[in-house]
Image (tube, rainbow over all chains, first blue to last red):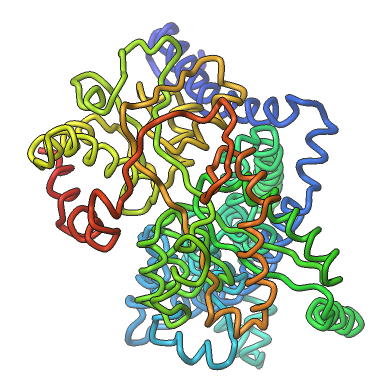
Length: 274
Length: 329
């Protein structure tokens, strides 16, 4: 029997659609990525190296990594805890919690940043208290970390939650009947079953933590060498007509994005295999 | 793990305990990036030679009004070097870090450098722009930042307004019509002067950029300079860029001596030379400006508008003149 084609569209229609999709991808993804790397190396690899190893670039790299290093583990714990609560238990306020988890997605990052300036800034309700203890949060690295944690909060929870919900409570109940403690059940039954979703959430969370611009820009104060993250540093270099430098630092971020994409792909394969 | 923690603590201890290094923060506005980079290096050299103390001056740049807002919200500047006196007045009135008499502490109203506002057009001046009136003509796209956040933008606005007012013998009618026409022609309102310059030069948007003389000189000497032209209007505004030491913050950081020396240094011969190199005009007598500086008659904000407090209230406060004029139908 002849195999039936999935669609009955004439060949030219299919080809035209494929061509349109490819052209769109090329125009909006491949060309810009290539342009970033081409501009970054426009003045040779030595210029690129000196741009990414200059004092301010290095401090931006350090701050960006530090921010991700704090924000991602925090959101890993918060995210799993929130997803676990929502998926496995019924309690009053559950739907409110579900909505709150999504809140950072629906708030503009600039508003999120401004919210922290209002709350923790000098004239905010906690301003006096912080100042009395010589604690600088806004316009300093802690503010950047807080804003990043807020913006990247939903990623882990949102990846883990659907899986936990679809898996139901049967295996946990079986474990508990067999005499496992609550923690044992969580670490030996619940966690292993969502590990790929969890890893996927962490990868996305990390990508956003390193790339966040809006919220961080508001709370940063833009002090060079102190409170500039990589995305902010790219903007500064660009505004100073240091185009090669701006694109060199941008190429680092793009490279991080490509690595993220690779890790994400591997995680997807492994998840599909299990 | 424990060893790592201990070494981290030791590192942190070293950074704080070393009395021979002092760090101060200079919160400045948009077009002074290149200027302060060189001034800071020169100051560090001079101060180290004189006292043996190594000074690192950290910089933060952005729209002048936005920077003042950040200082009020707790950005711990030791020194502010902003585009106009009103922004430092705002810091004095809204935070406890500065007294209202700040402008009398340093020579010439605490203004070491000044500048003025000029136009940059595309090569050959295709739209034939010569003076302020031409900016309001239909079909001309004008690039200027938002006066709510940018100091340069407020000078741009007041320069246009004042020029029309002077031509009409003090009558405000033509001035209002002129600025309304100009802001109808603005396609992008960036938050700072440097954003506007990038919009015009790099993104190629607009027919005329209204900007600081220093930024105009910078782009004309730069990569794209050959495709641009400078246009000097018949009359422009005197932009006075004041500086102040924030008492509250230097007391807290223990940096008063360095911060005071830093603002004094801005009046030195060395600093004046660096300012000229970057297209700014040192205040006071005995300044010989090179050829590339424009020759233009200027009026001051005090003389034309009765000072910044009045100008701000009449033009830029919420629902004042700018909000009334710039409303798009």
